Image (tube, rainbow, N blue to C red):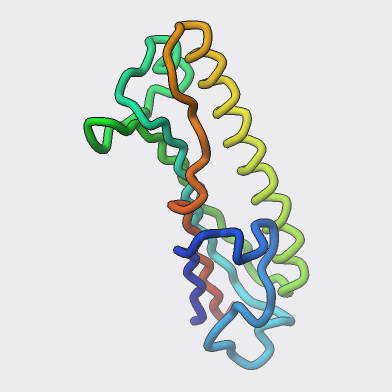
Length: 139
């Protein structure tokens, strides 16, 4: 099994793709057919604990990490079996783009609710805390 972990700041990597050299401990024929399992975490954050009822109605999973931080943890997991690496790359790119679109839409709706309620601060995607884990195994 090969595993990829991305805990570093994402600007150093391709957000919408996985390159072959990123896969470690490859097995023979892995690019032709393998099973892939992906877990992704996206963190939305606002640097305050003052959150409006409308924000809660948009995202009831708001958590407070400290006295000055509220976050939303978006978790996505999926598998793709018996596919080539190029098929996986295409599917991964579509899934990553959909997750990014969902995250940005949620940030926009949360910020609109903050603005309407008169609260200061803005929600943002904390890319430094985002993580993806991709495991590759024989089919």
